Amino acid sequence: MGAPARRGRKETPLAPTIPAQRRALAQALRDLRSECGTPSYRDLSRLAHCAAGTLSEAAAGRRLPSWETTSAYVMGCLAYAERRHDTAAALPCWRERWHRARLDDDSPTPTPGDISRRGVPPPAAPVRHASRRVRPVAVTVLLLLTLAALCSSDRQHPSPMTGLYNVVLVAPGGDEQRPGLAERLHQVLGGRLQAWAQADPAVQIRSVRYAGDDDDTFTRVAREHGADVVLRPMLRADPHTVTLSVGVLVTGRALGETPEFAGRHDIGLTEPFDVVDRNPRVSERLADSALHYVDALVAFLRGLGDYALGDFPAAERALLSADREFAAAGPHRVRRAVVDLMLGNAVGAQGARRADEAADHFRRALADDPAYRRTELGLADALRAGVRCEPGEAAAGRLREAADHYRRSLTLRSAVDPAQAALLDLKGHLGLGLIDQCLSVIGTQRRWRDADTHFTEALRYADAAARGDGGRHARWLAAEARAGQALSALAGDHAYDTAARGYEDALTMIGRIDVVRRPYLERTAVFLTNLRFAYAQLDRPQDLARTDRRIADLDRRLSDLALPPGP
Image (cartoon, rainbow, N blue to C red):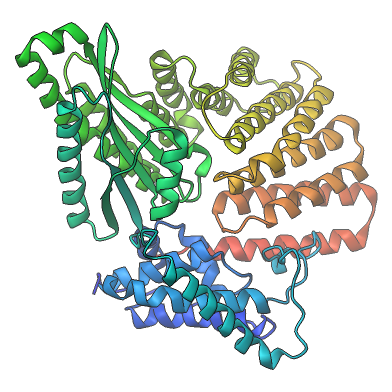
């Protein structure tokens, strides 16, 4: 079993008003955690690759957790108890429990007036049963049919991986006339990954062969194997250079709470073609450099895992290690913009005081790849984060520089799916709106109307962005855009009724996000505070009292998320 559980506050008893099956699911999760040695939620978070607050909320029963969260909770408990061998048998049973709770979840559609009872949106066409007694039988039959269908297809499709961090290594592709370097890279990379998996039981590695190296192939591999990350070494040659690269697909699940960086990234090592082709020693040296390159890739993956858990200092350390290994690869041209991108995000996530350091990493990434949209957005965010939006702040020049990068990001197009492209467009317009608001607050210019225009444009992309891996993040950004409109009405036009409607909409949007993270709750607190001000100006005592109750409930939830070294 894992480390002895640390004692802490007891979990709050489950409320009797919770729907029966959801309450049963929450109690079963609590029982499993107790059976597995009562790991703290911090320990469980590390093993489950899921935020501690999200896991704690799953066992609280206040709303139905997603299946992703439920399965992560179960696998984390089993991993803590050194019972990973039970995972394959346990998950179908837990899927049945979760499905039963989903069908039986009678919570009403969330309303802005009752933040404590928000749940997941109901199914599009709920089935009404004549009697609740027959529902478990119907569910069991449905599940048996579903499981039978899954079992019958096992011969044609690979079984999904069951690790908490799943990496698929695809056999090399590219220039088939010179397969040696790519094949060697594949073998060494596979060995390094297996060593990592042996040292960390949460990691699972699988090697496969697929034809094709386009984005659709990477996505298909991830879907069929249940992978968090897909890697494929490739060799590319032209008349002047040869590039040994690894395509990296990061799925939304790999980045857990921050899926905005999910997608395809390539990292490459380039050497003049004639040098490699005519000089065996240099060719061998290039292969040796690939060993550093492999270690850098593994460190990069570790950094992604730490970033997913919100452990930004650990992510920074792992990514810096990756950066050093890339530097040790020698004088070869190494494309590593994605490493600087993630370093910028890991550093910037540690607070505005490090915004300048984050900006430096983004600038390095842009120097390496001037057409990298995510880096333009990252640099713009870092520049904006370094400004306090307060009257008299002398930082208009920095804000205008940030606006230039947001605008440039909107002119770039990259090989991503439509949902990811929409997410990046949403971020660009949201950033421009926030800059216009900040310029208005500090008194440089009055740009409330311009801000509102950008927020409206951002919301136009929200539905398309929510269809992809970044759907959760898209909903958060959409809530920020709607709240931005509300603030423009509140501070710019003193249109308090319009502001109140905007904040109510923003609260509904953020309440539909299916995980619990401190940043979401902290932004909810800001929205509620501004909503309260609007209701006070409108002299609406009932709405004011209702908002006060919501604020008190939110304070309790934030207190629960403090999570001292205990359950």
